[in-house]
Image (cartoon, rainbow, N blue to C red; front, side, top):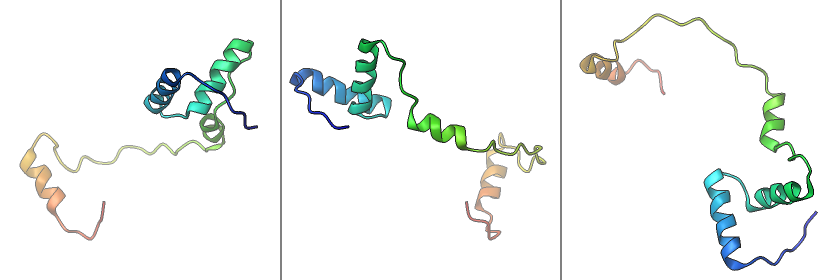
Length: 87
């Protein structure tokens, strides 16, 4: 549902900045605040819903150590090799 709210300009700017900082939307933050005022539990985020549907990634045994990463020359040598593999 869409609703229009008249907010103080300073509050609206802070809301936008906080939403950007958290990587969410101003609408999501406003809804969370309204739910808090009304005493409701926060709504489950869309990200959490998607996360719940994803299968667990397979756990593979570690492979052999191919390069000593503390040896810069060896590391660069392996990175510069053109074996047809593209990163």
